[in-house]
Length: 451
Image (cartoon, rainbow, N blue to C red; front, side):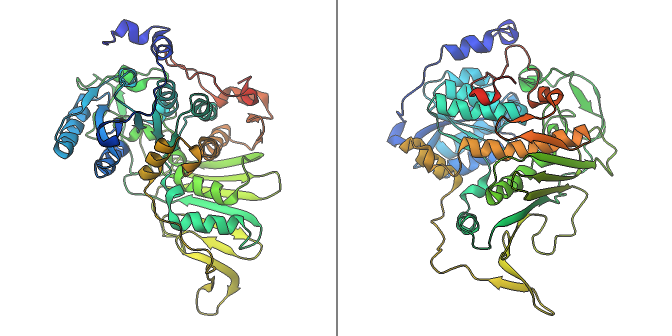
């Protein structure tokens, strides 16, 4: 099916296309391989393709989808070289979702597309691996979780640490009280790397190889901008969309969501009742909007707290954790990711006293993140996933709350049961105004019925 521009921007185009889709059964391809399509693969999606191509007994690529023709062509070459056959290529994901040869999709588009793409895929009968964060705002994450349940789809979130054998073991120990009651948790991202100034923009022509209208999808339409300082296709493409509110969630929702997910996993208190965040974009004379320095504090109903820090100006490599990490502080001891358990006893002239892991707490088998997804697809059992869509939603909510508190410039009170603010004037910020034809459907239960 060829979609004209008139159909693309029409008020009901997406609804008509999705409404005609029927859920598919679990009928796989040759040699019982799961037939895949990756949607968006200039960045993280490229690693999906590379990793999955190395798992030939489990899956095969039958299609690829990207709004950039150059990216599509490069991906086709990669898949053909590995599989001996070129995949079908799609520019519009809605056409890919209609392809009955596709069993499942991995989604690595910019953040503003994650939720709608996941929901459309579920409605089309496809299982989903969606990159982090699962949502661009709080409303969206709840809808993805609802879609997985309503359409009986396997949906896995791309925070890989949930598949880490050491963390699985250690988190169980923490939850079982190995270091007492956790009273404070901490996560941080002090990553520099490619977090240099992103340059400045000005209106300019859209490259011939990029469909800018499709790229924007659910986001409010903006004119294309060229980058006047850096040699890139544009100011937002590729990658630098992370630092604009219309498309991304800043560093707390970029690398930060990985550490935030671990923090929420260990702290294990669900959603907070209040949040405060402060910081700014320092040392960067560029067009970026999101903070590169941000400190956030979450408070929970039992009085415990969780703090989260972002700093992209470089790192002094925290004493016990490196440039990205987590710490958990219990009443009997503490845990530092990648370092282990420690008592609060200080050894003169040396490190803190280590607490050995009990002998009856062995490491679970190591299972790749995609292998866990494939196993769940075959079993049709969501419990085989490393985390549920709702757990993923809760971790993403923390990132969104941090950003909302930062933008509000004050502490915000939050109701974890209804996922609404005590200040009703703020509730409009739980979601966004969607472009016509790209609305995220309301599928969730009554907890957010009035959003």
